[in-house]
Amino acid sequence: MKRLIDIHTHNPHPEVTSPQMAGIHPWDAEKEIPLPDFEECDIVGETGLDYASTTSREAQRKLFDLHLQAAARLGKPVVIHNVKATDDVLRILGNYPTIRKVVFHGFIGSVQMADSILRRGYYLSFGDRSLRSPRTREVIATMDIRRLFVETDDNPNLEIEEVYNEVAKLRNMSVETLADEIDKNYEIFFAKD
Image (cartoon, rainbow, N blue to C red; front, side):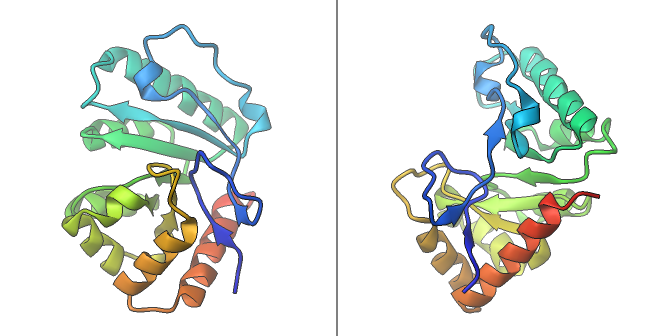
């Protein structure tokens, strides 16, 4: 079986491949936190917008722009935190056409919302909360597998193997085939253009 990949985790395991991230969460947009050294990371983020948060939307958008400026300058991919802000996230991303490698992590939403993201060539990642949403389970079962990742970000007690098992069931495929497909996605996502 191919290696297992956890695209976004706070509990890395030595036998699982996870990219090194650097970013300031949108919840912290009003805090005076210096931007990290993005040159040292594999992927910028997580960054994005969370309109369910009490953090100022203006501060979140400003911080999001700073992350995207760094990603564009350095040619780095981006991992997106998006809660009730899809239209604004996509609009702001549209200002950075050189950033093409984007993953919306912990995706929870409808097939229509997923399509609006996937049409732009972006990726979706699914974790524990995603798997508990009936409409998101439909997205997992039917979306283009070439744009799919899995993660444990929202549940540090969850093993990535459990997410692979559930996603494989939803897609009516073996875990080995799913692992192979996600491995290919990872190689393409991090390939230098």
